[in-house]
Image (cartoon, rainbow, N blue to C red; front, top):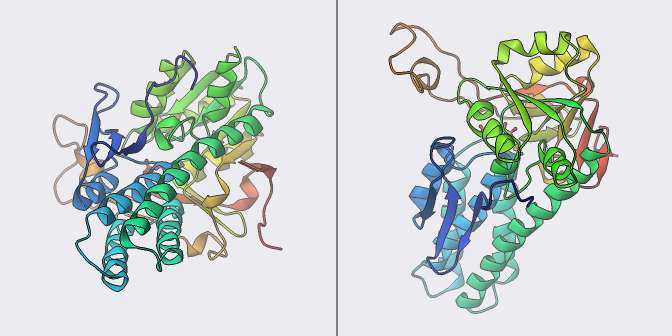
Length: 346
Ligand code: MRU
């Protein structure tokens, strides 16, 4: 990590405490609090409540969480172990529906257990431990590689617009959409980054602005409805966002508001790049229509963050957490293997 970036992994395993540790993102930017979670229910709740959030981070958290649960299974045969493992896996998978990395990481953990099923239970647990750490380490390497490829699209002084938080707080380190910025900073480059506040949960204001300012980046916070004006002013050379799931045809689900931004980008002729690990591509989804979009509780829109409720009781609220950006609006995907264009099948 660069000297100015947050000096702590967003998510990891504390073997001494036998705990998943996370930076509690609901407390940012005012308090940097580390939570140590040892119970499956607490890990599920942390993912649901977005104490840990961002597609890569919840994949790593779930993998470590499944290992922590499995370590304590009180069974003496593979069949009993596997039954409990599948129950715990399904429970964690139910925490959020859209980010495919959650299911991808949990599948990897299950496959690891199945591959080791002829071994003693303690060795199966060790294999799960090592796989969870491998998923974490791969995430760091993948995000760094995304940063390297993304940096080839930037020059010193560029204006960048981003949405939600796809930075180091959404992964273990570096992040995806903000990885090029953090790597550029390590090399002495300067950028001007505009971050949408990202209603209703304010990941842009609370998280992206926090980590960018910590990295010494010239950061400007805008309300979501100001993006059009900022683009019209000509202040943005490129847009980088993350994503939660990419369909085989290149439609990409990301934080609500992303697709509107892509439409604006096309109007103003600004390149729009989605930065994501290959594990985010879901080949079982042919198009965006196959991606499940999470619906969140109404109070996130009407009262959360406000001192007093800001909408009359009885009003209907529509609160989808994600939207799907059509493939043709996306200039390219910045992945760990380079910059690509869909479709991903062939
Ligand atoms: O609801 P969140 O905060 O988990 O949504 C996160 C996003 O939409 C990110 O852009 C996405 O997960 C990519 S993170 C590298």
